[in-house]
Image (tube, rainbow, N blue to C red; front, side):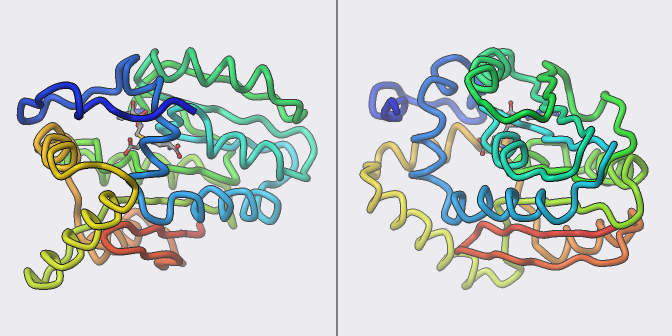
Length: 241
Ligand code: GEK
């Protein structure tokens, strides 16, 4: 796994972060060292796939990057005649994702699409995953995205939404941000790398509170929704149609 040294070598302009080839090449290392709870979300996605994916339905991984959640679903689905759609806007990601899926021996057919999750068709789905991806959509387009997911799901289907989150309480927000930075330092990112990455993500990654996400899921129609994982300012929510 190549080490993420992107911001040790280059300065960052505000809002300049992109999912390009340089990011795709170091991506597994970047996520492991940057997102507390990332590994736990991937294994829970596998467990949920075993329980919730129904025969003859589709699973969607929206913002699949290199396909970690796709591969977790694929190796755990027990239902027959299913199909996985792995979707990402970044061709640097989808090219590498396709190669990794070709190397994977699991049998469920999988299509990797270079497309915007907002514009694809979602239908007949028993499981949808947005693992740290909704945060990159403009805030005013998030309800339409969640409604589209809800409309494309069958009754009893599961939706996993993981996000970087903000806290309403400024003191707690500041503490959780500090703890996250300490997590990154413990994972061998320097203060300079942490601060450059933060600048690069300004207005690119826009966190909202967990309450805001839960309310939106309810507004879209999901009858059951709850935070199942929270580690500092990162949360994973599951919702059931
Ligand atoms: C994982 N889920 O390893 N449509 C599709 N993809 C998008 C869109 C969009 N509108 N906007 C951004 N992306 C993965 C990790 S990373 C999270 C997801 C992170 C894609 C973007 O190109 C990138 O690959 C991914 O969403 C977000 O479980 O880097 O913090």
